[in-house]
Image (cartoon, rainbow over all chains, first blue to last red; front, side, top):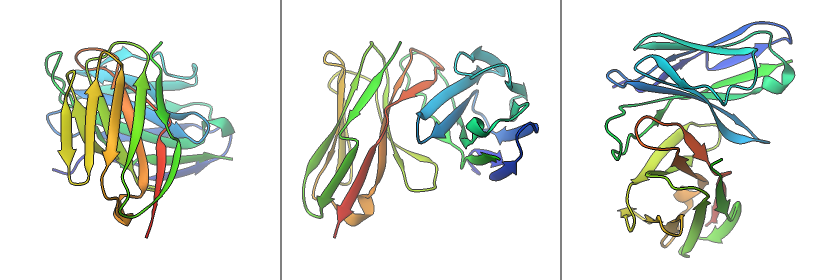
Length: 117
Length: 112
């Protein structure tokens, strides 16, 4: 299994530009999560999908951020326009979510390191 | 709002010593996770704890869960340099496919 795949691995852009991060979850997994990691705020959940449907987007910082999951094997996180404070490592994770009480282990991708100048 | 607190946040220890990392959380949850992160790398799943009294061990690491106290511990036995990393605990928001709230992490350095 290839694991969770993210692209690009590194992105450097200028303030005001649009940024699109991509994620391919592990085949067969039905839940997908986007997290952000910064030194100041640590690891934060941005949004998660179950069966391609957004379940909780309360962690999305503001309207500049949007996420989609058009099918079970692909998701995007878009920032438009980007700002320097968006600089962070963005992780995508996936899991096979079963019934409540199951361990629903989340597997993380390698991350995208975003720098906004 | 679910809050997860880890302590210590930084730990420097010598090889061969034992130590424990603590993770407290503020509201009831049915799942607690421990992850390891090496510098510049992704998160590696170590343990998933589901029930009160659960104990899991892998090599020199042992994790336990006390849901009544809302406390989990990660115990390191006879530490070796290869265990140097940042360790995170994370708590699920509820049953099913829920996101995780992470602690701030414990940066562990093991001196040879």
